[in-house]
Image (cartoon, rainbow over all chains, first blue to last red; front, side):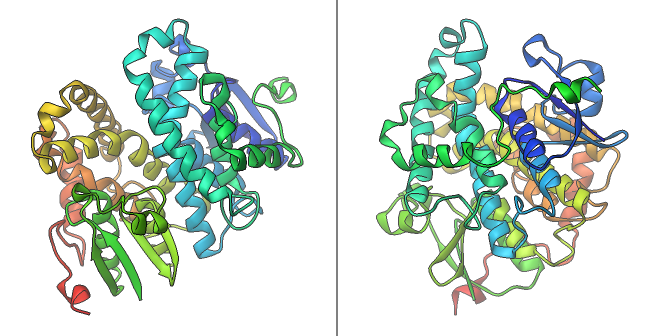
Length: 209
Length: 209
């Protein structure tokens, strides 16, 4: 059985938990509180030298890092992972976009505004960039979603899961999505998919194991 | 035939040119000077709303963005792209790491120090972060390369191409790699691969078409 090292309020960890839930894959959950330094202990760094969650133990002692790589591993062979050559590349395009253009802005704003006490003051110098670059990334997504229901392969895939994670909490960290109606409609389409779980949903059954 | 929109001195563009060369795939090259705003013209934004190179036209009017997604598309079906489930996920792990932890630091330093006149002064406030975070990422790579010849699948793959692009010019933008002997040895192994081209190599034959 997989073991997932995850932080409940991390959007990157949520991606893995959402895909595992929708695919009905059982797993053991280990909560890592990055705010308490638990991702930088010698024990954790031995598992992931990059000191980040989520981290998936795919076989005893074999660990896979990076949320979007974990999505490909979890979803491989299911309809959530497009395997056609161009569809796969387009799903990857949006997932690299997510890690390079969206998460560093919306994810950083979410982390410092909602998770870290006093974070807004601490990051005052960076906040303007996160807003400007975040809105730019949202604009790219809006343009795509004005013409497509989902990001790749004409269906709900792990590219949607990757982009949903921080977009669906953007309103909690000062982003105003009212000017992005296609994104708003897409967020509702994603949340309506069978097996969807909210970010704060907790797999007590996995913990109880 | 593919058309690649590329900037000769962009590490992200170099990834695509290197893979195309090593796989012997002919293509048409269109040079885009991002310093002259050529990636933000209405014509270019119609092709890639994210305004970045490289960009690959895979079929008439169908454009693929994000260097690492382009690598998967180009190399799909070749030994450069591992398709085994865990090997693919591990290659992806390192490619997401590259876009999230390495490129935003080494790539930014390379851009502002070597391509933009007066860039060092303009980005004085950010430079310290790029160095600190860049060295941290290099440390993660060094740890892996101390035990492995390549990043994934026990062989040279597109994960190596992705990480090579900015690592091999790190010394041009103030990073001192002398404390990273395993990275140094890996850079030499990559450069010795059949069909390797330097970043400034120009496919005149593609242009001449």
